[in-house]
Length: 425
Picture 1 (tube, rainbow, N blue to C red):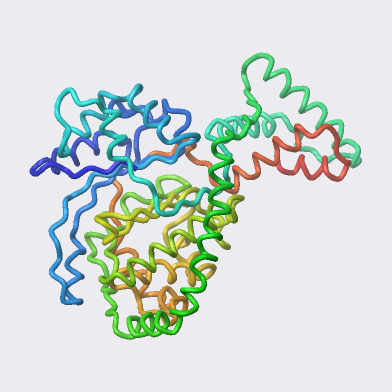
Picture 2 (picture 1 turned 60 degrees about the vertical axis):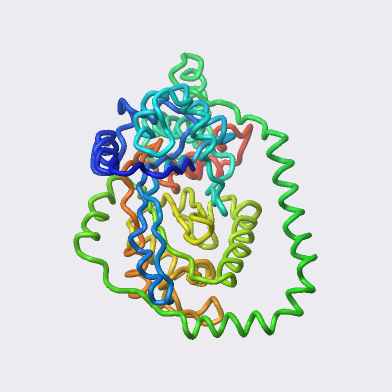
């Protein structure tokens, strides 16, 4: 995530430049002349979004004078491998275009080293979710191509006996092998997991519980005070959930449902006071821990439609930005959260100004459906440029394609398994 304040008076020109990168409202042309995202094989998703401070006015209900904050330009990419390597690749392949974009920001002058400038403004996420750790852009594309080749080749008539499934599978495997030899199809072996990544994951796996155990005696001693403080705030914090303006909703609708996948960007202020700030910080540490070690194979709790999701602190932890890429409609996405993980929404987002009132952090809140839906739409920000590396592919199809490849590469399987595999095609 590269973050930079937009220079005074440059926002209209920036919006015009970002719009020129799109093939449809908000949807990037992968071959656009400024940043041809499709040329970067390690990039799953990318977005450019302008964030202002419009909702800071909500702080007035706490008797706090809203601070004047910069308008930020944010560039976010979900990438394979090391983020710094991805930035370097972008700077090499699209340095001139990135310079045109960032020239609208403070601190970027002609001749500025684009890579060094981006590195200096790269911001780490407070928590991140990856749907399937280790699944690369190359793998997704190659397995999609494999599915198309096999689907076009598989016979559609009923098989006379279950044993015929073995014969058909062998014929298909031979056809794939010939396509690979001819260079018309690629099935790249999965690379080894980098040792450094494994060590960092192991360190996180151990460090967070150890720190939790160290803090546990203090938390037990302070539990009555913390519980009293939480409940007193919950009963007094104001709700701010008016229906969003029609024009704002129309601007969001225009950017949605242009693919099987949609994007979501939301921005909001953290409730004033150290208690809420510290509570949210701790909760995001545990969220990141769960996403890193538990929810790594297709699920975020019970939700299965999210490709990537990230939480970022902004402006000295006074605001939070949440971004995600998800399959299906916005309405379905919100209903998924309400019905399957409403408590999780409450745990994190109830620390934001205006959230529907909660009880003991997990009850109420997002369960108050209409108030929640008004709240999240009001805090949603139009994403000016959004890129997806594999248009038309949903997570359920990626999982199917992965199973097809795994079945093809198995040295042997039973007649029943072979028949089940053919049904995937």
